[in-house]
Image 1 (spheres, helix red, strand yellow):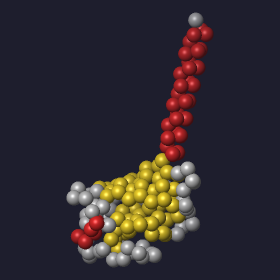
Image 2 (tube, one colour; image 1 turned 135 degrees about the horizontal axis):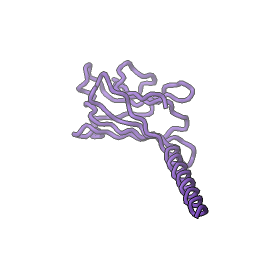
Image 3 (cartoon, rainbow, N blue to C red; image 1 turned 120 degrees about the horizontal axis):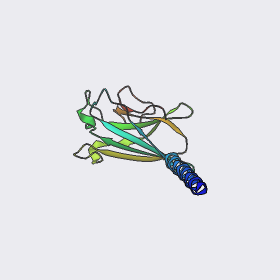
Image 4 (spheres, rainbow, N blue to C red; image 1 turned 90 degrees about the vertical axis):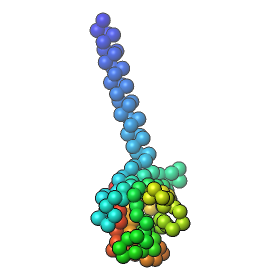
Length: 147
């Protein structure tokens, strides 16, 4: 009788350990980080999903909700620009979210995806007059904490 209880206890421990290992393996594949509340566009919400691909590059996916059209900001701007701070503390322009071309729908949602060979440690979005700026402007719309 004790042998059966021991086997049941051992099975439960092993099952618990396997479940924990599976959960940790899923968390290491993709990381989801929410943007902090914006002082410029308070209704804007979103998150960044970060994962490594088979080539050891970082896939950056951004989902945004309730993001006002960039031309409605005060002062009006031309483009939302996505910036990445890499592990060398350098700000890099990684792309544009362009509301005038339909990427931002009537429901004010947007999706952005890119790949980077360097490790991102923070993502933020600014409103800019020129989408090709090499340095971010002062109007930060959304930002994450450090990953």
